Image (cartoon, rainbow over all chains, first blue to last red):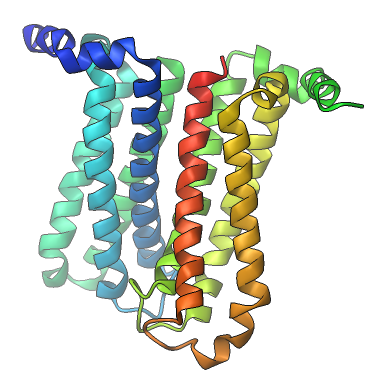
Length: 152
Length: 164
């Protein structure tokens, strides 16, 4: 693992990010746009599951676009996140907040897959619980991400 | 009193000093600001996408607006309160930062776009409220809103890398 992380840090891309403040700032800015998309999807689906937003709408009308927003947001934030972390891969991997962020992210993505694939087959309460859990986990990813960038 | 004088005065206030000098003040306020932006821009995005005719096409535009506005409003309040604290703490650096000016200009544009929408397009809403695809002027307002809010987020993050 240490060898792999050291290799990542030695790549040309990692060096480019490390040496350019402008590139780091741009990647971080785009990363935040991705995070906002994830937050928008997770919030809307979570609030719908809790009956607090678009309550008269069918599940598909909210969950489908919310899932797309989360998917696009994750794609953007994962691509930019990998690049941002590459110059300090070892330090990031050892950081407690980063570890929490990744744990929440994996749990959120797993719940996401479960909700999307099994959602129609699950009973109403299970779908609602799954949606709420997914939203809470993505919210935790954002909070842990904030802690990582601000307190590392 | 000139703007630099106001900036210096803002930085000398107690809340600004607390944000700048306490261990947890800055991280907590920045994290709150990011969460506020996610809530406000994220919720407004749903309304913008409805104006564009992309999501919730079976729901009237007015119903989508009524649904998202309490959440977006809460997000705005959190964003402006935390943003105001951050601005007060680093007013001098922010004043000279180009990305701060871009962010403020984009926020102004977002407000102007919302004002124009409510004073013109929205007044004729009864005629198109339930349409799956709203008229071009409404769609344009939705697109402008998404673009300027993206600009607010991008410029805001660039600020934090270029101010200190």
